[in-house]
Length: 93
Ligand code: FES
Image 1: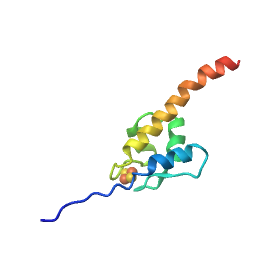
Image 2: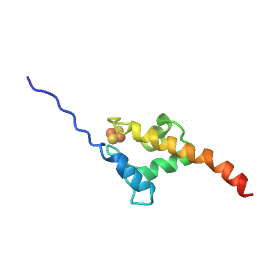
Image 3: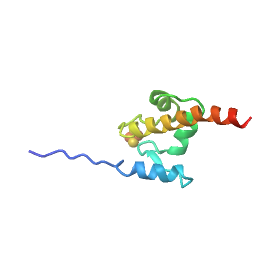
Image 4: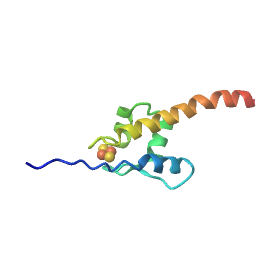
């Protein structure tokens, strides 16, 4: 009987995402559909607040789904940044 092995092609993405956040080159998050972290970040900044919305807008997570956690992490990241912006702006005014 043959065993079935899975390939984790996202194991290094979190490190690459951290580098990309620091201004590095864009990183492919959704390999199936060629969607970069920047495209996901821009869509999140434009109002995509859920993975389902992100799938409809960018196509990410629409195939194998192994990018789902990373897409959700980027959405949370952008939402956290949005939440932090208002107190900073209010303090500066
Ligand atoms: S890597 Fe995003 S759907 Fe497969």
